[in-house]
Image 1 (cartoon, helix red, strand yellow):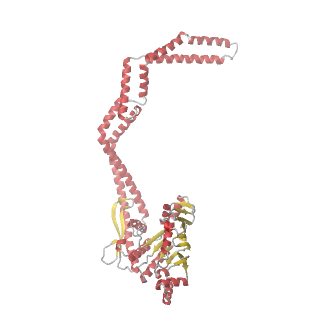
Image 2 (image 1 turned 180 degrees about the vertical axis):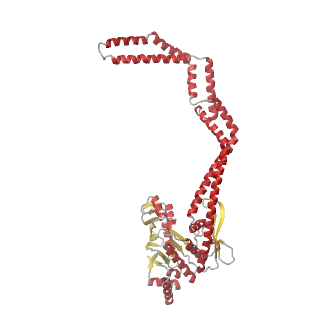
Length: 554
């Protein structure tokens, strides 16, 4: 609920502070005094676009602040938590519009974006008027409104889940079907490639191994000569025998000097062992260098084949086995695809059947609720002097989606026997106002915490019709806690629990808007002005008192 609104240096408003209460709050005043400015300011603080021209002449910035009280279960509180904004049962929004067009906004002293403000605004206040294209007159929102009225949340949740399961299963089926089609067209090519790669039977690291062997073979003579010379030197000098003799002498000496020679002896033994290992390794290498020249030719052919196949398939030689495995997997997929497609088709058909059943059940709920809503709206229209009007909620089937299979549009026939059509095209301005009000009364249900603003919804009507409009506004206020209305109807103003008068004053020859709350005599005078015009007569005052008296009995 809107509790306070403070405006500073916006258009004709120098400084203004207003406090609101629950129930019906009415704004009255002569044309041009600035009533629409108040609504513009309220829209601005809730994220509506502001223009540099909004700032009062000669000022660098204009500012609007609003304080709201929140219901404990309000989705606004959840939004504040997600945005890491400190919250309680009170919400303070402040927005600044600079003369150069820049804007800045804070929620509970934390800087926020215009997008976030607009989200909050949609949850805090509903704006309604004759040009309500974004509200009740927008057919895009009629399905949601009917669902709210029908209380289909549980059924709708099941439909949404079922729909996304259908989409998931459809995607899986489409992907497998598409892949099967592509691989079927390439099957001969895949089999040829697999046969070619498999016949080579290479393995990771083989190219590197063959390359090393090839280099050894090609340089074997020079390598063998050097290795043989080293081996001969070891054998010729009798290094191993000399080491053995040295160890023997040291062991004899060690008997007389205990452990002093233990480390040198151990070092020589290690050297003897390493020398033996070296001789063994040299022998192995010399043995490997003994090959038939034909072996080199075979090796080079093998290396050439591996490298040629790598270039052909644009992979490294080490990746050829991996490519082979992928080709095998494609053929396995083809072999199993018929069964896979059949299984996925069964799964998809089952989920679609489940969705259709849930969607049909939801449609029946909507159709049942639509009949009730149509009757309620028509009953609401009768006291609003639209006795001949017929209201019909049209439900048509559309392609399956997450909301079911329905599209909804509110239609009306304003005269007996006339065709039904969209609200905005069939009804006149005054009829639209009353229709919006009737719809809102019927659709509100037990909704709490959202303030409603009606901008001159009673334009073009008067007398008993205006009285009926006022009573419906009061009914809404009692159901929903708070309604703010800009009105020219004395019947509506008389029913207000708080009455604000917007007037124009002059300061240094410049016009300013002023808003003051009126009570008692002030309220009588304002309603009398609304009845008689600029010249307030005693008859008008008396009529004003009668209206206020009658209103108090409602």
